[in-house]
Amino acid sequence: MSTVEVRNGIHWVGAVDWAVRDFHGYITPRGSTYNNYLIIDHEPAVVDATHREFIDQSIDNIKSLVDISKVRHLVLNHIEPDHAGGLFELLALMPEARIYCTKKAVEAMERMFDISSWDIRQVKTGDTISTGTKTLMFLETPMLHWPDSMMTYVKEDKVLISQDGFGQHLASAQRFDDEFVKCSSMSELEDAVWDYYANILMPFGSLITRKLKEVQDLGLEIDIIAPDHGIIWRSHPEKVLQMYGDMASGKCDER
Image 1 (spheres, rainbow, N blue to C red):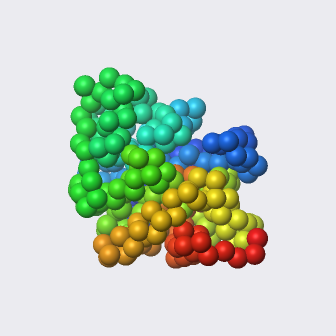
Image 2: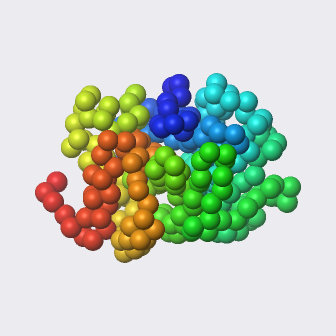
């Protein structure tokens, strides 16, 4: 699938997996997507590295928009294989790229790879980098759902790139919530959010409640939520934020 602009030079450059039917041990009858994002600026940045099986599609997407060798920043929100499986392939094509990830991500990668030659910067909540005209702020989200997890917030565009948070296992030709609802329904999208939360994130409800409060306390204005799986929330971000608040607190409705 070709690239899609999320907002103001932030592009979806991922892949759709129509075939996957089992993910982390639960059934995914609608497939999934492996979303990653290219931020075009004076110093281009890529956020996340997709599943290795699909990294060639992502690389082609990136190359269609920029000279991939000029990418200066590679943000790893999460190092699970469906998010970072294509890391080596990307690094081979991005000789100038510095990696940004949490301390826990570095510790995990040290156990798995020889990273002695990699240019890595450990980041924590509130740390920022500039790509030229855009500011990327990092928000640690440990155990949501791995110890290394974090999110990336693009301040100027009010876009939250949320890795596993707010996602769904939902393969679709549509990339945005408003597009999907026109072809299907909001209830189907909500059901996909619920299924994902129940199977991946439900044990961490108290952590999610605290993290939602932290986002509020930081004063982050969120216009778009761009997860690493499924549909991007550009028309109804408040809908999925409310859903997460309700699910994390144990509130339930009839399903």
